[in-house]
Image (cartoon, rainbow, N blue to C red; front, top):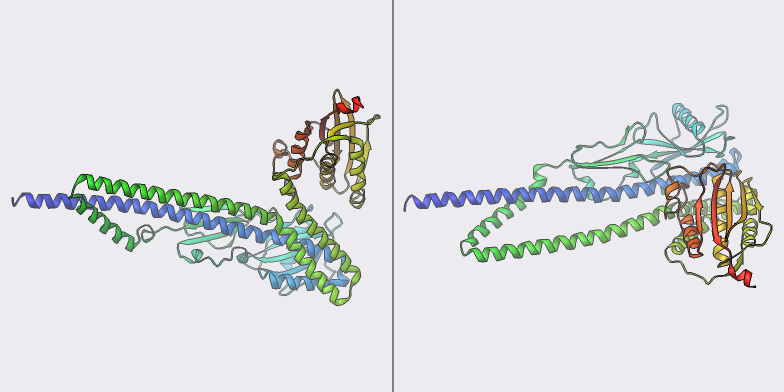
Length: 504
């Protein structure tokens, strides 16, 4: 009897130790998964916020360039007033500078200004530009970078318009998660991978993705230095030991009761995990939708704000002539935002109108008239090469005109001096309408997906125009395609000839 009791005690102690060790391993794994999951969610949220902030810089540069081109050096006060307002509302933009290519010309800048080396860097980036914004490091100020636009935005540019941006402001957040010593982040330049902000403490668990900005694809990285205290919190360890001990004591009252208790606990854990996963999926889906809409609307809304502020300053000065230009730009940006929402609604919930016999040639001529002023402004030309006989199809006239309008509008957007041709012909029982242009063409990587929603190579495009065209043409019983191996970029629209025309 004296031998059996110590042996049984040792067996129970060993069983308890093994059970505690196993549960602690499971706790450590679960805590690690939670930490990694939390890091991913927090990183994605901060990444979207930083991307939206970066997109705002594009709108600021567009507004400032328009003001400078309109007023020039003689009215630099207009530029400086708007720049001061931008700096006040967006403190991460530390200065706005206009640096001439010719060193003898005056530099326009807000305080604290640029060093001579930084000015040379601005001119270098502006000369390098072929129309897109340029990103470069600021030579003598850490944690800052340059965003440069040539002005006017053409080969005749004589100035570099530069924003000096505090990179720390892009990733600034009130979330206490990033104050923890185990969490770290870094923002780096895309070319040299030089860190602008922060350093990573560990590469063990991390997140890495360029910002969702075409002009500023800075690399956003995060990491989490997971320690033993993070995996096994003291209170949870005590709770685990107490729980395991209680379970082992309860097991003495019977195997069935213990099995039932364990089964109930497992079901409760699975149900809780499924609830959390379902909730997380809904929240993530809503976040992605909100982020996408915010990304599309950020630029026109920011431009409206900047133009309204500039207009207010001009109104105070009584500058009515230039105020009209600013108001026109504001109306254009507001219409652009409305068009984004309308195209999204139109693509997602098409309201099918009844078909009727309509003229293809009338639709082409109407589009030519609608876009004539825009073509003239861009130095472009729209030419009609129509079949000798009238051509009719069964379709809604507004939808047919909308398809042709979208194709011609895309052709005009491809190049400022594009030559656009609308050509019609007959192929058997089909009307063929080709829209050709002399622009740079569609990038090869976009061609297989050109008619998919949200696929676009325009910085300010929504990617819904061609998707809407594809849907409308299919509902008309026709087909739309991008032709290969043609000298000019050509979209071909094929629609069945109307049988009602013959009957009439």
